[in-house]
Image (cartoon, rainbow, N blue to C red):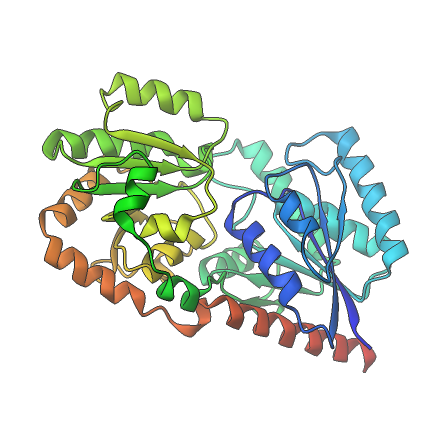
Length: 383
């Protein structure tokens, strides 16, 4: 008899954790697992979730990202009641807010196996000491009712051990994967795609993909672009994504005189195809778990210039398939981009080296490893 597995996530938007979760639930072995997906506040991918075949989908609007005590209490109650009705064998949570409230609800509902995936932590060194300590305390509290942790990077696993969240034996590294085979066999008319994006086919393109929020430091990308354009004015810049910092980006682009060479594409569903149009992929994040877009760029044969955050060095080998620098090092990032643009042969070699991603970064391997953990944990409960 198939066991019910309930995945809970805060918001279904175009992010790595969300896209991997949406891919996972319909691809679980139906003979072994019955998937249920619960999401919180409305997101861009809600429609995709409703169309998933064989997946029961529920939405709890009171489950929101921000700290809102009344909404949080309503979300905890709604989650608890829903889980008591569904009676899952496993609850598997993703993202910080859903991770805290979802695991608390699972404990209140008496769910036998509770798993949390760490896609990067919600607490960072950029927060005030009070906020950071509070978030760590909450994580430690719900850790007590967590059966198993999955981490997308070894860096996240080690941080969890260091702060006392769990012992090494309670956390397994399961990479955030991409469909490597699908990306490699993708055929793209790059000339047509560039024109569709408002880019000139004959000029180099440097791009970034991600939400326009503080974590991704999108204004740093604009500043990198300004330094690159100063030395190589024919370069075009593309940002795929949207969010709260869009207006700030537009102002910065205008102030730095980049209006004619910078394109804001908004949210797109064709990121793998867009990757083929890039000469260099840039990511200016301040913190991450393990950026899925790094995997998409590398699998597409595009060299990466990014920040050395959390698990980045576990996929981007500095000087081999890309370059990693400290967060906020705008000049260093720009220098590496210019170096790649000035040496197309070396850049192409670096891109080809990136295509040989280890099997652990394949999304089907990610799902198989999750299923193995599910079966092992369920067997332990029966024993």
